[in-house]
Image (cartoon, rainbow, N blue to C red; front, side, top):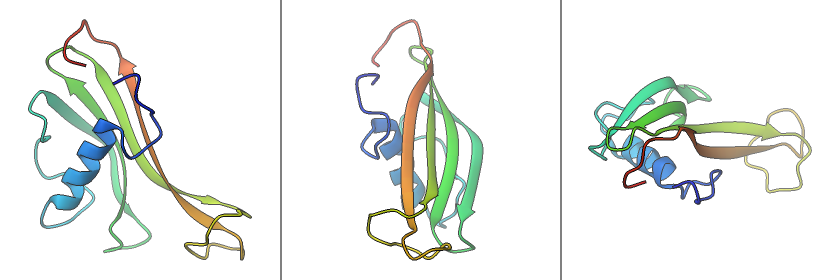
Length: 117
């Protein structure tokens, strides 16, 4: 997984967590069960809902650990305001050209002894 781009929603771990979080019922910022991947343990470091209750805009920082190879990954999802951006406007923070950007990051924090990843 190291050869995959880290700052994209298409990274396998970012996609795994994002889809599982939005599929669960009742909805909430905290994952209510184990990971869909049986060999990955997750440890939540931050789980909260941004922009008010029921906004469904979840920010999280999760540490995944692989029981097969011993590797660990950090998966981060959050929202950032980019001041005076030239992109399409998605919200009103303080100026007419401010934009809210959704950011995904997944990276390895500890290399394991080997395995399927």
